[in-house]
Image (cartoon, rainbow, N blue to C red; front, side, top):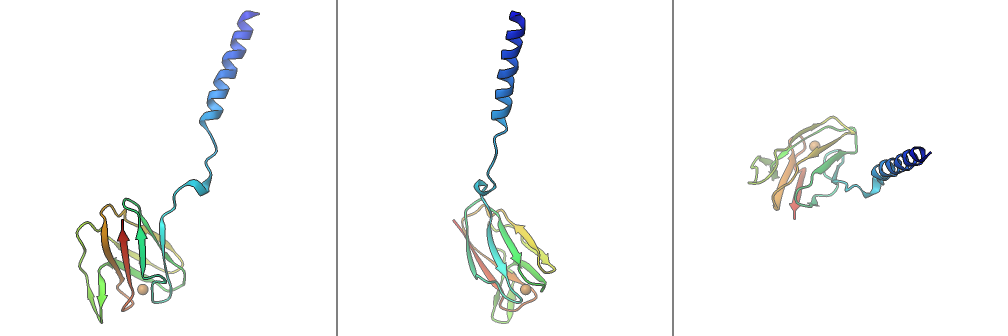
Length: 127
Ligand SMILES: [Cu+2]
């Protein structure tokens, strides 16, 4: 009789521990990456701020493709300079897709550009 009660208590304790261990995580509480959206031949916002250590989601909202790399358009010339501390970025978009770049682990200002579309620049400020 006593053994049965003891076993019951033990099972109850075990179940309490198990249930409290698998608490529900609200999807909205998970930090999301900062996003930079792309149109047909431009970045929708030309500057984004990324918290240090986080990634950046590049989102192609249209059917046009893009090739995003480190560097910037200076007039009609592409300057492929990669700043010190910048993550390697070389992402090919085929349209209506999303690629995460980074993480950006160094504070500073970093330039990204599209090799296909002249003047398509994005400034990433990492703080
Ligand atoms: Cu482009």
